[in-house]
Image 1 (cartoon, one colour):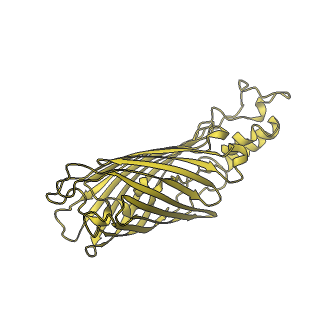
Image 2: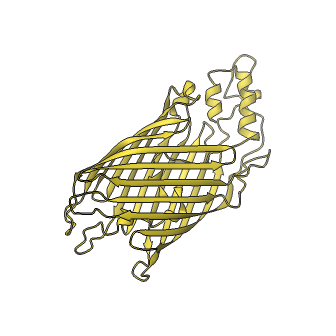
Image 3: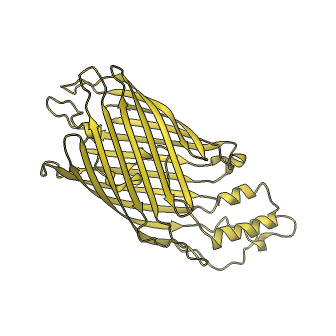
Length: 359
């Protein structure tokens, strides 16, 4: 559908109709969703991340608009909730449970994917600083398309395209439903600050995930069988507190391999602590702001800013295209925004940051 929007301004109506039919019917394709601020939707990044955070439960809303400059491009809406269970029953670990859903839609013909995900992880404390988890993800998905705005050669009268003319086509698209399965593993490490005023805490997470294990078909109509490529995702992120400073560095790396597609995303943000949390009572909560940029190799640069206070966080980024597609987009890749809330219960004498591994 994105190809159609580009061609609208470049080709004659006759050529457009022919190519539109070819790309829309015989080769229906959709992307695996991706986010610039990928670690804001951790269960989407790696099912082993379910419940792996310092808190009781977490909820995230995310919206992404991609390539708005070329018309009806991708719009992605996502929601996720997760948390740990049986934390008081197991001494050396617990289970994580996550539920998420997203809707990804593009084009005048509203080619879209709706997906509901259920993740289950098992978290094991290796020692005071290290933990590991493995996770499974089961998904139900539906692909859909609307034929209302499709264009046919019978609607071209020799001079112009007439959208009110009958298409003389009798077939109808039917939604395609399928089940999908994925798995992942995660390692987390964390060190608390050496003194109350040093702020030299250090945390790191790294993981690997394998998506679309069974390679389900998502075909909407006749043509070549359209099976999802399996996808490998590798990610790592860290928070490095600078000694005797309210500043911290947040380097990030995310890459995936899916069939012929590759994506490598790196990022570096600086985090400044505006207000420190009270160390023992937890009455006064931490407030911080982070800003920096993400870089998708060969694709886009995305400046980003994130604000955190009392378990609530909001992040905004904006993609600026540097790929060949920038000719059509004018360099405007599109905005992304997330809203996250983490409920962190008070622990007597330890404030709300008692677990260095997941801070």
